[in-house]
Length: 268
Ligand SMILES: NC(=O)c1ccc[n+]([C@@H]2O[C@H](COP(=O)([O-])OP(=O)(O)OC[C@H]3O[C@@H](n4cnc5c(N)ncnc54)[C@H](OP(=O)(O)O)[C@@H]3O)[C@@H](O)[C@H]2O)c1
Image (cartoon, rainbow, N blue to C red; front, side, top):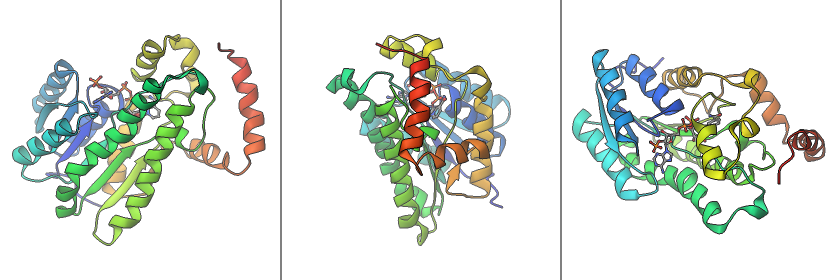
């Protein structure tokens, strides 16, 4: 088991949800934490909470769409903590619409944040993570395995992230760096409100059923377990992992099931 105390981590999308919960869980495990997002007031609260509990943390305002912001995050983390053990590319957005109704700007926009934002985040971190023989974490989704109707673009970004993680895992192995993708199922965060606001849909319509939603702390705890005992993929439920993974075995059966689901929730 890897002792995490004193091993610095940088986390994007840490102003709410999974990123915030992971920052708190990592700090509790003794990791110095550099937190990034666009909302500085949220980051300042988080840093205060970590420092008040005796941890080390810094905040860096960063929009992952901009390479220079991601460079600054890594630069500040290394300047403050002396090294970087782990990077968690977590910032992400959703979008709910029929594929044919998404504008080119919408389609490119979600890829800019979820996919290219991940690459922008990893790029400056890589030399430092290599030097520490550290751990790269990418927040994908259960939907990397299954394209949900009306979430085709989102699912595509999550599949792209998963494939980056899978390729890097093998590329990095001989150099001592661990690479894991994180696959949350429905998680109670601001994700659904942000998505509804962005796409003009209702929160009720585009949220998973209440019984299927887990708290972000559950994902955060699973991530800390993965940092301690590295594994290729982080899931919080074996049932979820199995159900989402077997959908790839039969497109016909999966279409049949999704067709029933899609017609329960009619859209424009
Ligand atoms: N919630 C779920 O059910 C679920 C399920 C599977 C996967 N995920 C994935 O989990 C990750 C975290 O989402 P969440 O559920 O925790 O949602 P969330 O509470 O909405 O958090 C998203 C975070 O990303 C940040 N962000 C968004 N756009 C950004 C940008 N351009 N640059 C920098 N930061 C940006 C937001 O901060 P600012 O607005 O302050 O920048 C926020 O901190 C995402 O990658 C999402 O796809 C979520």
